[in-house]
Length: 507
Image 1 (cartoon, rainbow, N blue to C red):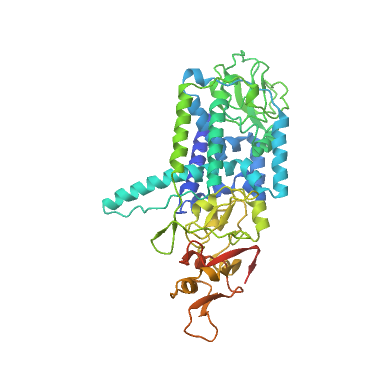
Image 2: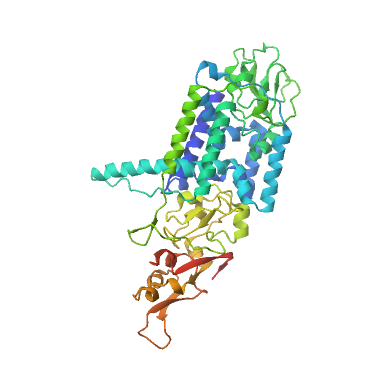
């Protein structure tokens, strides 16, 4: 019964969190956005003391149920492991592996140092929630988008507008590659070794594993009932049960309850560690394991089939090509991104430093941005962290989607009125690219569409009212929304672009 409850709750959490990354309408976030807020690392970075204390208390009470129920990456590994264990020969394919704490705590130390040093790309690479977010946004979302577009096509032919088409494109090739590699590595590890990643690499698993050694409720082996058949050890995907010695390494146990269901003699039960009856042997204080120290049976045709399916998934997602569009419907293939000396980050971030220190690169804000403004950075130290670019749209003053969904406080909550007064950058005019001067035609797109009224058109020749009109930017009024850059018809580079500010200010 406990296992069924755990699986049910895990399926609900996993499905809803996945939909948060797939739902391009942003509708689900109003109801289930809190599931992103209760992820461990985002809660720590957001200084959400209530959530952190809740997760700590939950672990001290029930063990690492966070890893088996709430964490989407953990549940994803369980799904892969379940497919890998289909069949009688594969069902009991695991074995006990001695713990190697140097690996777990070494990765945890590297993770903490990267956070303190502001190397957000390394921290984002190791964070479990963020890793799954990148997989969902870069690999699953294109398939979801194509499915939606197919339904929109069929509905349109039937005279219905219940669905509408959406663009499917790769927002960042480096991030896509990272997501694809992460996906393949996780599939291989979970298929062969179950929770190898959780108990060797994951920094959140290491922290919660230390706490779970003192959990009040946990699986306990009754030595009087146990006949040392070893089924529990061979079914344990965390490789933490030493059936011969009647020991369970609780720092690696994720409270999946598989061992309880597997035991045919009722020798394993989930109960309080304070109970004196059938007290277990002294718990091993080792904290980690690696797949290399465990004998595994490798899959045959079934595993190759699963990995082949994974390859098809990656290949199909890679076909999503980015296209650039102007303010109308014309496809512009030669529009190039300006080389900004300071990147742009959303209003609510406050500064580049705050954003870099708090962002986990989960891509949730990227997935909900309705204007295609946010896309993952390709910079070395900010790799996978979102930044703004205006080839496909501009940051509309009334939109606050990214601030609404950010779970780590990298983008603080902000309303539309506040956003309209925050200057994230300023427009810069490039004379050599301006259409009135290069082509001799009137334009004024940038001035007409500036929501802040920061651009005025003036004669290019002082004192000659008939000379071509060129834009003049009032930097004190410009908020850096990018409407001017997005709608500028000049190619390949816009004649006006937005330069970011390291520190945002209210104007």
